[in-house]
Image (tube, helix red, strand yellow):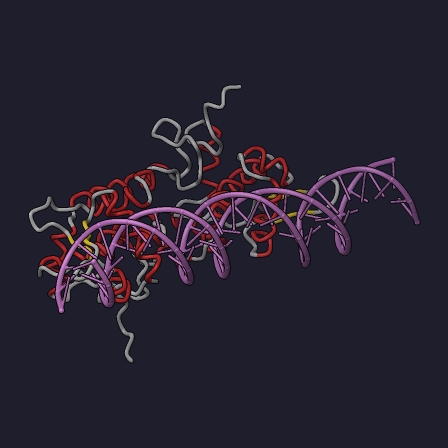
Length: 148
Length: 148
DNA sequence: TAAATAGAAGACTATTTTATCTTTTATTAT
DNA sequence: ATAATAAAAGATAAAATAGTCTTCTATTTA
């Protein structure tokens, strides 16, 4: 569905949101470790998110990545848009260039219904909203069961 | 969502179903041309589908690919399973190894609901059922609007 | 049974995506 | 100012996916 880069991006921004809520600015290595992702790759992705204004960063000692506490809540969709582009939700799953209500592929109608709902929920769910759920152990950002 | 190979596979089998309904056995070049896909690649994919028993083929003059008219209807899901594997419908969209109702990723519940629906409809829709819709111009297997 | 046709199989190439490494620039604290 | 820290940027490498080419085998028709 999404690229690896996009998967890491969503998880990374959520981790940053958690830390930001406590006034902390994690570096890319810490972030990568905590979301189970390769660190130089996460670094690259974070650079892109900074350029696009999704997150902020500071160089130097005590530097790192953060979300402005007063900033607008960030819909998960915004992250997806920056990394994979908004087309991920509209490209034909059977690869047709033209696939619409007017010229549908064989599964267009089924897929559309599914995807529109998912899109809507990613537009309505904000990174900041999910921080609480993570704190309460209701949802997870990294692999569970790695008992060692 | 699906790999290119899987996209071509679904479109190819549907084209074969149309021709088979008329007792014809198209070759891989004709199939590739009619679904707008690269022909040697389509050839490979068809071989795989033959090995897995989704479609049949005959070599030699008048040979080609076909579906047994008396055979069981083929759910779209069967094609997906052979090419991409059934995991495409259960892998975590944020890339977590463990993502379940018990240990959900931040968007697990939303994704699950909609993916289950899509899965269900691909299990219930059979290639043969869609042939009629294609004949009637209700749905399409190749790109439209290529006006030249 | 020979020639033509068409799929099967395997090796190979290209492209894209994912991941890494190195150098540079900015910031902070001493 | 200088040293240390940490991100930015660019170049490179590895892996996965997509696509191509060549040779081989089976079938049909004359």
